[in-house]
Length: 427
Image 1 (cartoon, one colour):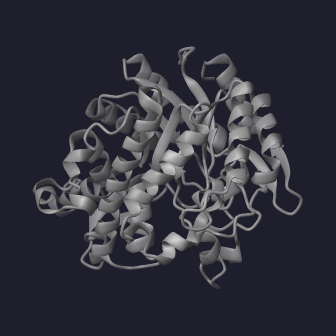
Image 2 (cartoon, rainbow, N blue to C red; image 1 turned 180 degrees about the vertical axis):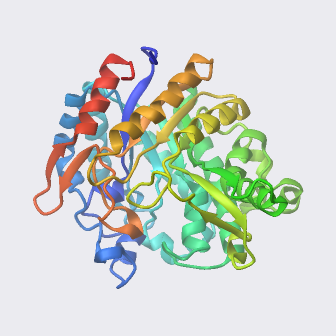
């Protein structure tokens, strides 16, 4: 039987904009008001009403016996205008975190989960002058207010995804389509991560455990016999998947080009080496890649899903083996403990989530048995939520949310996860 050590943390993950509602000062709130931006016309105005109902959601976590919770704090709510801190918002986040700890649930707080204060977005967002110092200042404010009730921190969630969606594909704010700007945004976020890491350490010392939630996908050639496909899979993996993560591990992002590129205040990629106390992995699927002259904006890499494979409601392939491979590779590269900071499936019927959970957790149990230092798993997500440009269609929650009434109902997969967390053995 596959089992987990007593120290392994089972938890869930959410993000502020996706569940809280009631924040009108973010770039995503403004973006969602624009017709055609969000499928179905959905907006995060109410979402899961989590800002008012967090005690109910905490009670659900406690009833499931989960011991950890990853959440983000909304920068736009805390600093709605430049240099103006909303103390009442900070106090409410402090109450949340304190209540979690009282319930025996270890919090992990994300500072930047895709959203920005609108005032900062209006000044250029990730590309604004001084973005890295702004994030570092926000980190100091958060650490000063919440550091005694939170030990685990994530500076930035999925920087590669944000750079691609916002500046390459044009699907998220500011809806740009510029490869040059995408690369600049990626580099600026690395500088901001380093600045925020140092700020958290300055305030909280070595007791604070700080990392990044890296979005990692397995990239494999569609035709292994094709040298062009093999090359494209390698290039796609190196530029999209690996570059930010490698920078935090080795101080190298794009290879020899790093020496030629400086960031704000002379920042260089080498400064990122060692700026993580744990390595966070967000894993959902793999990419099967083939060379395509028609996909120049994506480095000539066309991604596809093999015919006949199991997929989620979003058409993403279910490929648990990829998690095992990624965990083993990056545990070795990083040399620090690993947490799975996101893993989940869009499954409205809840018919695939249970097997999905078991098969992915099995990969982790086998890795742990082989000596890989994996310390926790945060399932995405606790609740159905606002899924960015996809709106409210995808259902990722262990808990079903009726958006009309805000009623919550634990799905069968939620009860299965609770059983695994309680018994620490996979069925």
